[in-house]
Length: 313
Image (cartoon, rainbow, N blue to C red):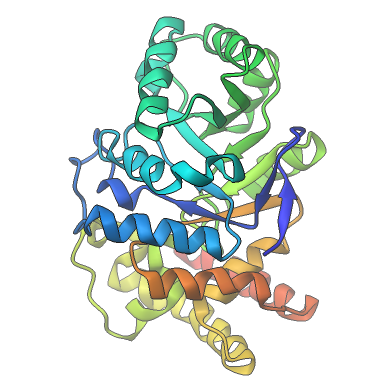
């Protein structure tokens, strides 16, 4: 496993971050608490320990994942190795006033069975609560040692700049993968220049970049409504999948490994958040760190990806 500096903090995170959204069943305030079949907590706790044994020290959850259930599972699984882990959780946009932040953080720490949070994200910006008010409270919590670093998720460049006017931001969590590259337009360069770590979610585009849906596998959950899973999109993105397959076959690798490792070649990129309840899938994905892509292969994927994205519009 490789480890990378987290922003300007004194922490280093693994190149793979375990994303624990699935372990809670989904977002409590987005289409219900359960968006897919939830495996028994004991199995998911075992998977978290397997991740740690594979060198993963970075774990990502949020108060809304299963209305806190994800945090509870993470806390139980990592309790005796807590000091060896970098645990990130997120405060919801409707909890961004000072008193609400304190309450939400207290409840998150209770579920995580810890007295501090390594990285505390604003899950999404609020239209109603001034960022100055939120950052003031987060800065106090950091000074008190209750949180070690502040992060933001789903922020635009302008929103990130506004937050940084009131305090240090060490990480941002955007959607980023070979088929979702909007952050390259402006956000990525700014983060690189200002030492803000990029921690990507949907690193394999909700499974599209595994290639299985291009070969007949049906999607039977919330993803069936997403644009990338529509037949016309699958037809367009097939060109990228085929190019990835050639590279994967030459290396004896899986497509997901190629997709994840491509991220590591992007300037300023820090860690790929990978969420799953499937141990085999996780063990395959974590091996992405070991894959070697040549600069020619990276460039080839870059060009085909951009060509495909133009066709997708």
